[in-house]
Amino acid sequence: MNARAALVACCTAAALAAGCSVATRHKVLTVFFDGVPEPKQGTVLPGEQATAPPSGPGAPGRLFGEHGPFAAKLCGACHESAATNALIAPKDELCFFCHQLPRDKKYVHGPLAAGGCLSCHDPHSSRYRYLLVSEPEAFCLQCHDKQAVSRVEAHAGADRACTDCHDAHMSDNRYLLK
Image 1 (cartoon, rainbow, N blue to C red):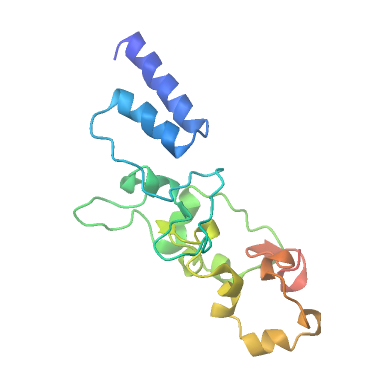
Image 2: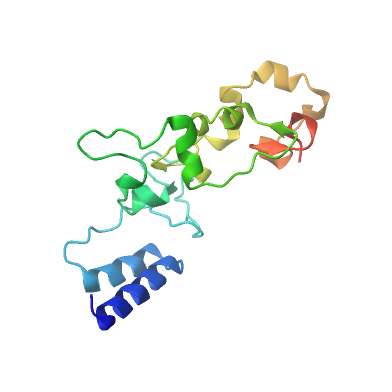
């Protein structure tokens, strides 16, 4: 690769990494490459704000966001090859290849402690914020018993999201309180 091509490649990579919008990223890529697919409706890059349709961010068929490698078609970041689709590491270790989440708090949420990121997060895309696998308002109640939670005095009359008071991953406070 000559110096000019290297400079163009570096500038392109810097522009794409700088957090430009999906539309801008698409325009830049089409200048350098043929056959760049149109962005999917609802695609949101990390750091971008999703604009909710009238029926809300969880509307059927709408993506709130995509996992970076999936959105960039970098399947090899997690999978061996398209032929086998096997993962490059066991599921309980895979996310930690890229996501540095020190588990240095006194209390660690069970799924995180067990490497069960996929219990809560979709590895490709989701209609929900943080790539959650279900509706955020009721998400915690997928595993935690609603009746048991409602009997806790601190929850009496609470109409807030669980994560307003609890950290979803870990905390130095009991019950993962913030």
